[in-house]
Amino acid sequence: MSNTAVEFHDLGHAYKPGHWVFQSYNAEVARGSIFALLGPNGCGKTTLLKALLGALKPTAGKVVMDGRSAFVPQLFQVTFDYSVLDMVLMGRARQVGLFSQPSVEDEEAAMASLERFGIAHFARHPFHELSGGERQLVIFARALVSEAEILILDEPTSALDLKNQIVVLDWITRLSHRDGLTVLFTTHHPHHALAVADNALLMLGGSKYASGPASDVLSEENLHALYGVDLKLLPFEHKGQLHETLVPVLPYASRARKEPQLPLS
Amino acid sequence: MTEAIMADPAISQAKTKTAWTLEYGWAIPLLLGVGVLVAILASLCIGAYPMSFAQAARIVMHLAWPGPLPANPPWTVKEITVVQIIRLPRVLLVTLAGLGLGISGTALQGMMRNPLVGPDIVGVSSGAAFGGVLAMLWDFPPVGIVGLAFCGGMLAMACTFGLAKLSHAGTDSMITILAGVFVGAFFLALIDLIKHLANDAQLPSMVFWLLGTFVGADARKVAMIAIPTLGGGALLMTLRWRLNLLSLGDLDAKSLGMNVSVLRWAILALVSLIVASQVAVSGVVGWVGLVVPHCARMLVGPDHRRLLPTAGLLGALFVLGLDDFTRAVMKAEIPVGVLTALIGTPVVCFLLWKSQGKGWGRE
Image (cartoon, rainbow over all chains, first blue to last red; front, side):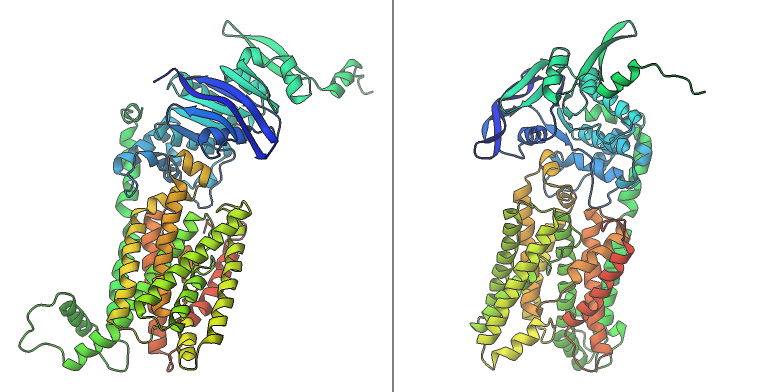
């Protein structure tokens, strides 16, 4: 097994001939690393994920996935109201024969996976009654029980409150660093990518992209080119280590703060 | 990795929690299975010729496991003739039709992620009916009617999904239902055209057959519906957990390692086969495949491992009950298709009212 879990070469897709969503993209995702995909709405992040998952045949280029993958969609909704245990059990699809039903061992593995994420007490609960963050953890548990080696997440922190965003990001880090899973995720939050990703790819439109170590790629200049807004990289120290985070520069707020606030009399 | 998870001390607690599903989850389908057997025997007692439950049971046991005939059998020749020739074929035909429709509707709803779908909604019943009347117009033998009904059902299903695909709707949109309505309307128009072309001898039998009736049931008709329904139903039963996965959506199911398109077409073919065999022997019996899965979901939840057998058995009980009602209460033979529509419409309206604001899958 090579050290590269996912790679794509000269990858491009056009829904209409000549109208490329993205073109000539190249990247390699090292096994066990975290890789972030960033770009504005409509730049083709989900299209790229679909191409990686094999759900969409790219117009150009090739994708190599070396290992089993599991997908965590954005805002997971189900038509039928399955229990949490039923949802996690579905992760065993590759292990259960086509004409067979999940065994007791499969159910035990699903329960153990829920225990791992600390949500086993929800096993009998309807999936739709859980909060957004809890649902994400259930889908993580499903990915883990599927024995996936590559985890692909589509905007895993969207529509989550701050606490759940941190919980999900923490689990992404744990799954990668402790369990050796390769994690590839899309996000609209550059500071999330900076916090957890080893490498990042910025989809700048057409054949333009920036790819490399997250700390290099997520520069103020690149992010300005990507989103057309200003972000500042701020260093901070935590447990003796120097980290960086990104904060937006709000033009109006900056002007407003220059004027001293007079106390009301 | 799973082994590492299994080594977790929390596993003992997990075992306790999972036991419930495996031990008690099957109670309702098992009870329904017993209920269907009792209903079959009870149905044999209904009719002009009086017969006790015990006598019907004795005769059925003798027919099911024929041994040497006792010197003084506990039944009369008339009784065994009534059961064997008249009542049992009809009761079995009705049971199998209900079973097939319940299973087909549930499989379609799960696969298409849409609880508003049924064999008659996606056009498969109309397509099968078109095949059936075409075979009747050409004076085909009964096997030919089943064959053409199956081809018509498959053609209608392919048209519905083709239309939905053309609009990039996939299987998870109201577009599929609309496409089914269009395709159904088209095949209904073709049926009217065939009725127009039929001669005076063919037309009355076509019209009565299209209303959905179990009159004229015999052993040959039972065999015609039993083989596709039990065979196709058994295959669908083996795939019932896969229906859970299909109901998540294409992208998710693919990412879990499933060959979605192959599995979907296999299920569509099995559903078409079951519905076509039902339509071929008893005409269009609507609403069962739409209403029964909802009722079954209320009983056992959405997991298709329990839902599919429950819906099949509930469908059998529902159609059997309606047929018993027509035979016991009504003087005239009302086509059961008329009754299922009369009952199905208010039931769907009730479910629509009950599920307001919660979504259809969450009764």
